[in-house]
Length: 123
Image 1 (cartoon, rainbow, N blue to C red):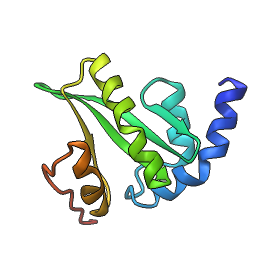
Image 2: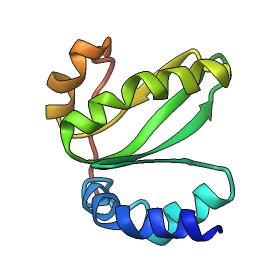
Image 3: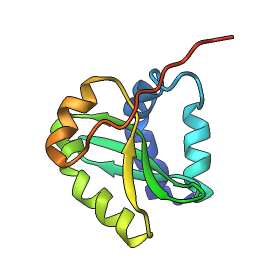
C-alpha cells in the first residue's frame, strides 16, 4: 500500500469504523483495507467523508453497491455523481446502497428509490 493511501485510510478510519457499527458485524476496518488493496472493494476518500463500494455481479445484473459511507452528509451527496460515473464506466446496470432508514430520505433526490429493506434475525 502506498504511503498516500495508508494516510488516507488512517484519516478516514473513524468514519469507516462508525459506519461499520451498522453493518451487522460483517467486517472490521482491517477487512475493508485488505479488500480495497486487493481490488475487491473501492475506497472513496474525500475531504469531509468517505465511502466504500464493491462491484457485485449477479447472474442477470451488475451493480456498484455502496457498502459504507461516513462523514458529513453534504460531502457524501456531492460524491454521488462520481460514483455513478464509475459504475457506468465499469459496466454496472445500477448503483445500490444499504443503510439506516434515513438514507432513503437523503438519497431520494439523487435518483435513488427504495427497492427492498434488509432485516436480520440472529440465530
